[in-house]
Length: 147
Image 1 (tube, rainbow, N blue to C red):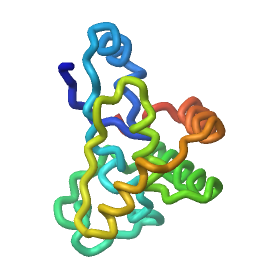
Image 2 (image 1 turned 30 degrees about the vertical axis):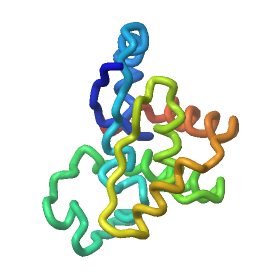
Image 3 (image 1 turned 180 degrees about the vertical axis):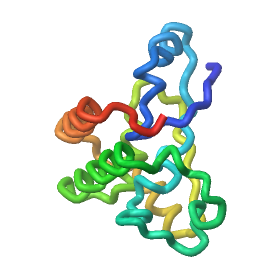
Image 4 (image 1 turned 90 degrees about the horizontal axis):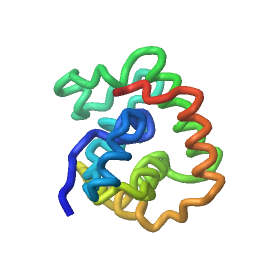
């Protein structure tokens, strides 16, 4: 099956919002989603203005799509949701992508073995109806603030 590559994550769902989902499903083209962690913002590592040494933000300072008041509010809401659900925020973000019916594969990346384990373990997370409802409620309140 052919594939299309797009950034896709909890705060960038323009693939489905803009009609690409419908066309790709109809034409049997799957999505290979990159940046399921929103360049690291959905992990919580940049929470409250943190700037970890060696992070992409510190090294390259080109992550502006994930910055600004709308992005900050949305990202924080997903981090809080992960806390409420008792799951790692990285795993929530990755499993969300993995559960989309149009997804061919979710591209993950890690700079440490610990990060890789968290990412891989996300695929074993049980995605519940409550998770789906909560994620969609947040998306309805703040649709794709980081296109």
